[in-house]
Image: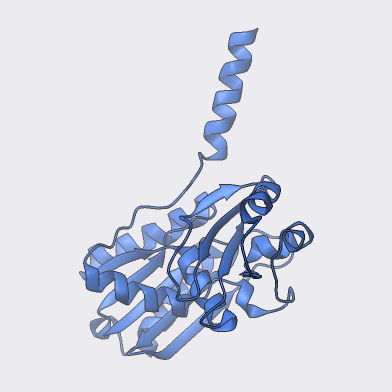
Amino acid sequence: MTIVGFDTATDDTVVCAMREGEVLHEALVTPPDGERPLHAAALLVEVERAAVAAGGWAAVGLIAVGIGPGSFTGLRIGIATAKALHAALGIAAVGVSSLDALGRAIGERAGPERERLAVLDARRGEVFFALYGGDGTRLWTPAVSSPADLRTRLGGRSGTPLAAGSGAVRFRQELVRGGLAIPEDSDPVHRVSARYICELGAGVAATGAGTLDPIYLRSPDADRWRERDTANRIST
């Protein structure tokens, strides 16, 4: 089966076309330093390129999309695109945890025995994370916390889990003190890869349990601002 997969949960726009484990097209679009992500401008362009590389949309049997956790705007763009393609083309679409995709990439470095921790920058001084065993089994469900709380939760685990992701890069010093090993900042393992979105999407589709519901883990900034403004009006 040919799969087109993409993820916009982080600042990167990543897209892949894969057939029976062979990568037909892979793209990574990163924003210039200090600029906003390019999801709105780049995603459909790269998705179309992926479809062309696969032999056209008629050859595509599945669309897989990262459903987070990640940025609210990024997730909305990615999931809306998957839903629109599904509706317009009649191609099945499934959602994949962005942390699971990152965890699978880390697993290729960690080996069969070592635990791996996927950590994404959640802004507001927090991280999204999930822990996986040496066989890839998810040990901790996706969660959000401060790096300090994550370090406390890691306390007492045997061995040295291998951690990667934008959150691991940003909070490297705190997390290393918590007993984690983290590759160099420039290592591509820190980026969510669309090829793993494709691989995991195939598995999800086989179970028939796929969903396009986003994994948010916390309320949007706009909701927090409204709650703050309401509280301020009540207090005055």
